[in-house]
Structures are given as C-alpha cells and as structure tokens.
Image (cartoon, rainbow, N blue to C red; front, top):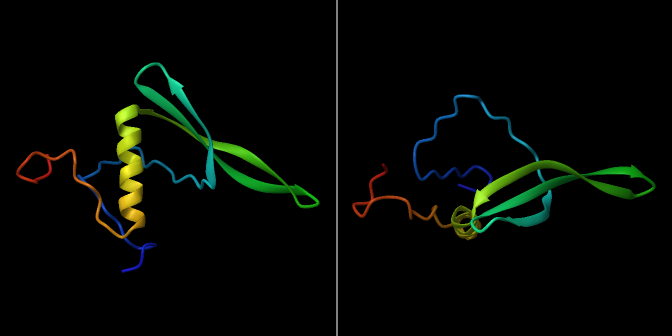
Length: 96
C-alpha cells in the first residue's frame, strides 16, 4: 500500500460535524501561546500576476505543547512508513 492510500488511527474517531478537509501547502507561523500551547498558521499559495504568488492563511490550529510535539513524532513515523506511535494507550496496548 502506498503512502497516499495508507490510513492509520490510534483510536476510533467520531466526526459528528463532518469537518471539511482544508488543503494546506505550508506552515506560515508557529506562535507560543502562554506556557503550554502553540498556534500553528497554515497557508496555501495562489498566483496573482506575472509569476507572483501570495500565501493565504487557510487554517490556524491551537495545540497543547505536548500534542504539538507528539504530532511531529507521528508525522515522522508516517513519513518513514512506520505505523502511528501509540503513546496514549494503556500498557496492555488496547485502545481506550
């Protein structure tokens, strides 16, 4: 299975509001908010004229610092083909 069709989940997800996908091309800014949170600003680009591109903010995520750090580790694992890291499960390895 290639990376584009691979889906890994740590736990079952409930999506009661049918949250829409948002296409992002990059991280425009990471800000520390207080002692325990960060705000990550994501952007997409568009051409406006003669090869000039502008970056448009498409989403801002506010994450606990620990969630942010775990997300980086999860992305690295996924990029290398490994399954998602399981660091929020009890010692017996079963999902909560």
